[in-house]
Image (cartoon, rainbow over all chains, first blue to last red; front, side, top):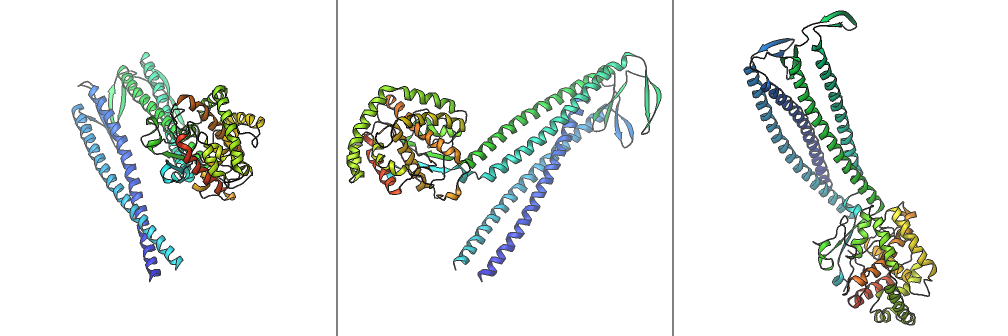
Length: 129
Length: 399
């Protein structure tokens, strides 16, 4: 009886460990995304600053695929602002996800620890018996 | 009775931070440093590129046109002429380009250079920070490997400065605060040995007190010797109202026999060890341990008490567990011992009322044989006579 119990516990532990590694992968992915977005945000802010410094009559182009398309300065400005807004929102969302995942990871770790302890105590009991 | 004078605890640092963990942490920080350095290198190339570009942009409008070789395909060039030298199409980022004059371009590039500089600065600061962390982790790892212990004292016995519950390993304690804190400071900070050496010298030069103490010791020693044949623990207890160390003197001979029992040692910085060890050695040489109660004896006693304490406290008394720094052990013991003396001398003038020293030093006393029975009687004597004793001394404590 205790042997099957032990096996069950070990299987459970394995499952949990798999879940945990999945979670960790996801967290790593999220971190990467976050880094990418942060870089983009920085770049966009730089662009916005430069655009703000341009005179009204300056020619602004946007590279779309292989061609440079002439753009209105105001339009370009608005586009960049929108882009910044979007990236900020995205960053916030990623932060929330990462936090969520962190919490999940911690609870998983806890359960795994508890499982390990139970297995150990079971094994110790068996050793004595 | 033991409980009543329990003053704190001694925890092996290794139990808090296992060696592997410390090394792992150090490894991680090293990786982080490598990453940051790569990043820094990248940022520096950007800065260099930016500066050359800036110079070029400065120079281009100086002429109306430039004779250049125009790249054509991968390997081919043909001669050409660069015109409109004051018109630049600047990539602002994110696919946005702006038409600028040379002057305006230079402005943009300068702004970019500034932001790159700040990036470089922050990266450098970051690396510095990480390096500090790394050295900390490495220090921790080596300390753990050497078997450093953390000594915690309860607040009643430690003065305000060191208290708030405990004098921690890292904390600098005023010299008279307590032996433990004082010694510990040195273990924790390798920079402090210099401080200790002069202190020791001062102490040994302080002849007035020294002579007085010696005379007292001699007197007590005689009593002790008389008592030794019989029930020495009771006798010595009475005779050592002032110096309970004397009561342990009877055990010294035993203790001097070598034993491999005690593995743990509080290790000092090596230079410190040697420094103090030699001083101690000098004293030890011209005074016979067995016939005269002198500082060496005192030292030996405290030493053996420490050893004993350790034996009780830590169960790792297996010779095979020997820490690889055996060569240091002797020096360390000597060091602690002589420090005990220092404590004796220095603390007397500065405290009119007795100053109880608390805490214990875990020593690696492999050249000392400590009889656990002797030790326990010694410690109980120590506690008994403690209140009337004007001189500071080590107390053992466990747990």
